[in-house]
Image 1 (tube, one colour):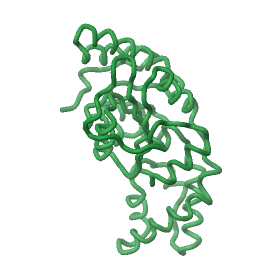
Image 2 (cartoon, helix red, strand yellow):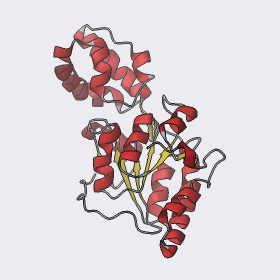
Image 3 (cartoon, one colour):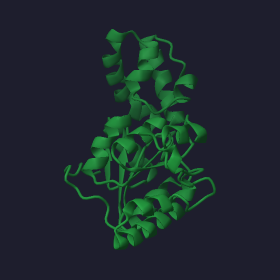
Image 4 (cartoon, rainbow, N blue to C red):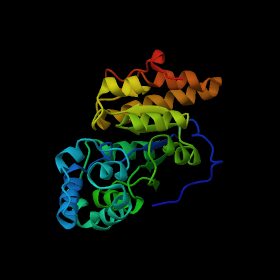
Length: 250
């Protein structure tokens, strides 16, 4: 679905935002599919995996969850096997999150670029997006938390949208505006405490917020004050979406 751009890619032009999106529990509700994949893995390996518990804490890399159930020496091979069986069990049951398609389309409607940056195995991430008809400009997999900054910087992203505190950390490491949705394992207070600049109820509020952000960025570009535009954009959209400057973490 596209390759990573060079690290020298420019930041988003005024009115043409480059927006990164997390995948699991941000754009897609992969819990039913991942639950099925874990049950299949457990049956095949003979090792008990509490699939209900596992899907309640999606976000970190697969190996982190496998380390709870498998001995260290089996994690690498088990992870490879999980990724192999994943398409057969996890793609069909997975649903788009409310507003997911519209959020990506809102970026494209402004002439911007939408990039999915996820910890998920990239081929499986692409299968999910194709199956659900969500069409970003690029997909980058295998990156978690601060590691996501590599792809965000490479694509010149100015905004990163995610549901986990790890996504907030990735956005901040890339000097992106962190837009969070409490649709995954992390609640609004936890996301704000981690340093999220904007918290929206879910992605259905994103298109209106993005329009305000883009207008603010265009106005600030004309006046030379982009940081003020990013702060002002946080007040657009649904109640509770405002930026709290005092929430920033060094």
